[in-house]
Image (cartoon, rainbow, N blue to C red):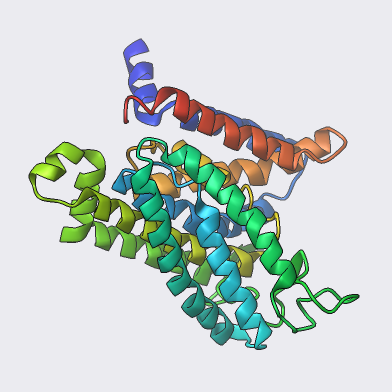
Length: 347
């Protein structure tokens, strides 16, 4: 019996085991306090779809050997710039979303390339530097949001006529453009078909790239640099490629997140967005040196399930709102565990 438990522990892993136990406890508690399970299920599907692309953005960086890309705000800012430009010209529907992507992706390529050059100069310190780069960019962009010459009254401050608001509604642009595409209901459960299909398409593209010659070379460069050198693979070039792809996925991810959320969050909104994404992929079984699409799917599902089910239960049992506190405890605790136990082992 002990051998079976040990085998299960080794296969599942400590983070997934702890999160699964917590999730089971909260599901039982939700049934006891008469929370609507169909409503929670529908909310979970939306939360998984809207957050999964940001988690997926970590895979290219990990495979390229730069670790968890905690500088996701770089790509996020590119996506936000594309979104506000699309709103400025009063585009709506699919056209607005497409234009935002068309502006954001080239910006992400440039920014990702420059950041990749920085990472090649500080090998071994990527996560530390990435954290501060992300913080610095978010703070620096606060100046841009205040001074950028946007005029659309839906975005600028009403009393001054200049400077963008903290939050910008998307009801007239690309609000729920993916969620509502082919969406349907099963009883009281709303299925965001387009959102899940879009995430599936991105997963397929990442998987397909991993099967190409370049994708394999990037993976070899990240997992075994000495062998890569012996094969004539340019490691620095592969690290830059992984950083660029990660930044592109991050800029797409924030657009997917925002259209599902219903508004853009500027200024300090993106500051901590890399940490829940990192926590989710680590819960899924990834490490700072190894990651797969299955880790993204499993980790996002478990992490978001806990964040969907736990706060309503806690708020019913205890007065006050603990959702953000609980989110911080879970995400930062998992990252701390990964850095403390997995970095040297390279699991």
